[in-house]
Length: 561
Ligand code: GLC
Ligand code: CA
Image (cartoon, rainbow, N blue to C red; front, side, top):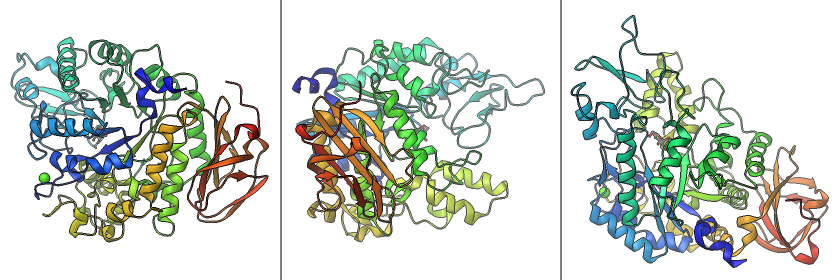
């Protein structure tokens, strides 16, 4: 069994931790998290057991979108530190057996990137074709009606050269023209420069947009997408077996996920799909007017992805990231059962097949930002949408209610390290307000308490390294129509894990299907240990557990695989 953890699959038993550098740890007291701050927290991450860090962008940037607008791909943002600080982080991480995954933001650059500065100067610029320019349409209007994700048209007019340029995000994030082979060559060169420095992979920002056809308004999943990814694989990380790549793909379906991550496709290790996190969004108004939580719908999405990528491809597993609300606020009960529900969510997710991603602060059960006025928000998307929704007639209170649920700043309040002012994130004034609950919810308290959420995550992350069945076992769901309980098993050879999780604040009694009944060893539980799942069982509020069946008592035959 042990050979399955070597070679190009070594990352499969690892857990990834996402750091949003601006909000993680401020070392020099300017209120902004920085790279030396991250280095100073490596022991904490090593103790948690994570094998890889995904760093949100650390590059030179005017920070219009907090670094997702890059003006120098091979430079470090001054407020985050220097390239020496980066090398220091890399080598200190390596000493602890932790790899660094960088954020690759190549759908667009900042408008301050030297390529764009030159391109916008003249139609004859050698960088003009690095971006996407179109003439005004016949009646001197926009080239077409495509809107930007952050609100308003996706086209901005440049008077100096009399053309519009395309930007899927803010007008300060012009899209690169991937159809230009020179652009692709520059990007691959830059990627190799980072790989040669010793990084462990890339998280690829909105990578499903690079194959776009703006004239046909096919932006995600465009006609050239997979050709470019295969070329990128060939030209950059393809021969480096230990490199992990994960594409951010809001458009992904199980079918396209197999194209990205299928074993013979030579593209990516896996993608982030968003079906499970967006099923609670309103069809028309999206995340700003969320719908009530529906566990049956959530489970059907999770199971669909587990089944679809059972034989080929690979899933990423996550509840949150820097664009999403805090997991415990969104899917648990941050007020009445914060500890129980945070552990329940971790249980439900970490036993699935795929690579778990933990977003900073999730491991201590951090909660959404309790902001009540628009001035407290810093996120460009939230601020733009506030203006547009108010123009469209929504009240400020209603918008803030939506932002409190789903706004991106929920995940961007400073990491809570201790009960010190601002949760020990900074000795200065943080760039965004700290959540005042830091005196109660913080890493110091959580690390020292054996029953804490943090110690629960540490155990889950450790189990994945120990148990091949947790990495490779075949998934099977039970009780699909049950609106309170999520239940599944994982099976590998003679090993089998049964998982049950109550997603409600009430006790729930269930008749257990034959094939889920088990007797064995308690792997983890958020109340008392559970070693038997009988014909009937009652789960207390947000109770969750996993039982490893002893091989002579497996309760069923393995599903055909
Ligand atoms: C991705 C990032 C998000 C960013 C956007 C544009 O969705 O996760 O934070 O604003 O791309 O780069
Ligand atoms: Ca700082």
